Image: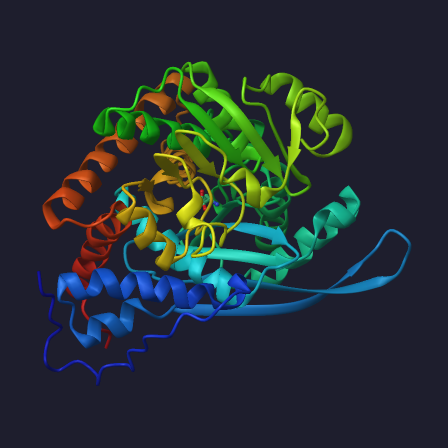
Amino acid sequence: MSIHLEPRTMPAPPVERPAISAPPVADNLFDVAVHQFHIAADRLGLDDGMRGILSHCEAELTVSFPVEMDDGSVRMFQGHRVQHNRGPGPTKGGIRYHQDVTLSEVKALAMWMTWKCAVVGLPYGGAKGGVRVDPKGLSLNEVQNLTRRYTSEIMPMIGPNKDIPAPDVNTNAQTMAWIMDTYSMHVGYSVPGVVTGKPIALGGSAGRNEATGRGCVYVIEEACRTTGLNLAGARVVVQGFGNAGATAARLIDELGATVIGVSDSGGGTWNPAGLDLDRVSRHKGATGSVRGYAEGEDISNRELLELPCEILIPAAMEGQIDTDNAHRIQARIIAEAANGPTSPEADEILFDRGITVLPDILANAGGVTVSYFEWVQALQAFPWTESDVNDRLRKIMRDSYRAVQATASEHHVHLRTAAMLLSVRRVAEFTRLRGIYP
Ligand code: GLU
């Protein structure tokens, strides 16, 4: 399908096709995202004007700000908020706190949010925020001060009809409560709709906290049907035992699979006979990491990915599966609960090896889908039950998977390119319909 802008449009913005350089990943992640976009754009036959529009982020804000620490000292922090595409409605995307946050990474994550919302059919464009900080080194009070000051700095960007943050790596419902309060104090009245992923008491949605992991498991169930893999008895490895990873591990375990390995930023643990996830959680609660769990053997995050298993769930950071280890992955299905865990070169290797990769923009779209439900419930002033939320989530994830799968079969491409074809086509379509102002 070719999408042409009217001839009177501005000269096409330069269409860059950046070469993908070697790691550090966070420094070139936007190049990876643009590279993936061009693969879809080539197949869709998008013209240069449309490529120029969709391969740039519409707005990028970088802020440097001071925070007073508990001991009275002052530390400077840098943060970003990026909106990739404001076409379909408000922009949407999480805020992460991590010591490796870069502008390139936040831009990539914002672009992926655009495709993610489009692939599951949500009326949002993509955005993302991040602060370069290791919050584990801060007290709760310091994290609150940082959150409130960062919120003030990005105030011009956000709003309930404009750009709606949500939790991401190292942020949670409490972080959203502080953002909502700070925003509300600035404007002079309560604005619960400025964030999603809020505590239920503040208008959060039932099921939001689990939604990313749950949505991922719904997609895995569908993929098992397509590939003929029996989930009951399948061996599962989960990299990242945070919100998404721990939920996915628990739910897949409830479906009869055996979780044999898990990890977090401190390292991993594995046991070929299966892990008792409650006990692993208690161990992490007591020590800060799953590593050192008595009934498992310690393993590095890198080695964990290569364990013999049927299903691998990368649920941590980007850049985990690359040309170095893609040949050694033993899983049959890789479900990307994390954003951007697989490099484009690794995608090809895995495809050639017959490994099914459930791409991030589909596999982890459950979080933003229930964020959308939270937003809709707020607009209706009518809370849904958790089973309502989960039933609707299941239907969206299942239908989206089937549409992506059908596109992959039709075009003989892997599921990432298929998901990109569907979402880029949708975003290009409304971009064409809206036209260019003025
Ligand atoms: N941070 C999540 C993601 O990467 C959720 C975003 C949202 O709910 O807006 O998809």
